[in-house]
Image (cartoon, rainbow, N blue to C red; front, side, top):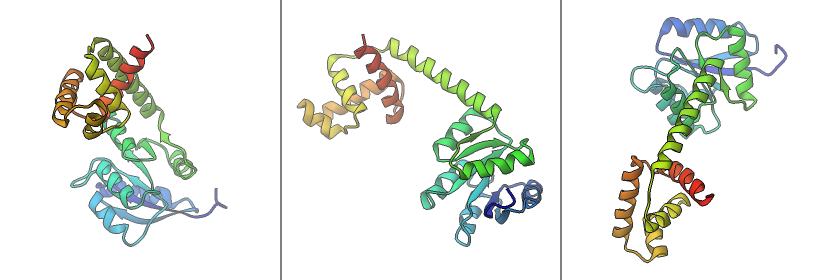
Length: 222
């Protein structure tokens, strides 16, 4: 790796002793240069006005803007930035939220130096990075979600009109478009949609679409 092009890295962690330890650990590698450090998401955004690194190693829990929100905010401004979450927390919600917001990987701080450096190189190659423990937790979470959605789908009952609206919702139509296609008023459509959301148990459109896709797929396949 010594002959490879130099990689610039920014470290974001609210614990100064860990920040210094990471800086020392990574700086020992001849082709990796630390170009900035920050102790919060807000400070990271400020530092990015001065220098834009190849990779950011981001802690997840920090005062003010944490790692998840910081990842989202940074990628809005720098959509091609590589951000690796490096944390002690392997909570399912953190993992899913961080990856959903565009993080390129989720690593635990007990990772050794060589693996961390390799992870930086792998992320730059376009690989999604998860340590074994994190990957196992994520896979288990997905299996649980799929099982829950399957059980919910079996319990759902919709009227013919609700099914018409559900299909249009899954296809991405808004209330106005649904009303035009089904010759209904927008108020009537919204009432039907409220009933559908109530049966599903969510007001989140994305979650509703996921559940309805599974339900419609199973129903249409019967």
